[in-house]
Length: 291
Image (cartoon, rainbow, N blue to C red; front, side, top):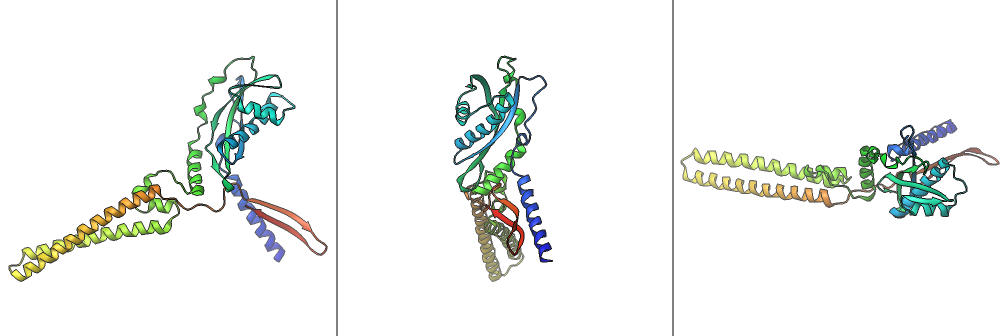
């Protein structure tokens, strides 16, 4: 029974980790390279790379895309130096005496990983036959914009770095703070504004009531009492209005400038390894989860 329960737990963890990896952030063109029009004298390949800065990640992505491109062109015997040379050249480059016309047609913003690393996906266009039709620039690069991915990436990077982009949420008390994971501050702004507004309504109602009583009596003592109380309620109301305005301004500034909470585990960094093991007196499944 224990072995069955253990196996079920392992499978459940595996399914969850697989679900996470299958939803890894990447643009639509980084699943399958887009197919160019029939008869086009170019093809498309994507590459992915990691590095400790944006340039390192781009260079690694270039190397990945170029490896696929050389295979597509039938160029063999490519060294790392060849790839580096081609990656650092302009539109036209020469490798193994073959002229190669290529460019980046789309690239993602850097995706934050653990340890200060970055990951970038690029989509490259490569001319298939340099002596053939020159339809290289007929490709409309706007077709590869992925607004859905861009939005998810901004939210993801913000959750990792704590730096969230400007959002209209800042104009609703507490909403931006809750979105950033700062629940305490979010609740404080919501409760604070609600308390101020409630106090304003109560103070104004009491002021109006005392003013009505003031106008309905001819007793000088009562008129003075009601008048003083009406003035006090008006002062409290005005103070609460000022407080609500100050709190709202604080909420907006905090919503724009304050950092949010950061995630402890980075996307794509968790790795689950399941493997059988056998010892002299036992056997089973070894589970290794690395972050």
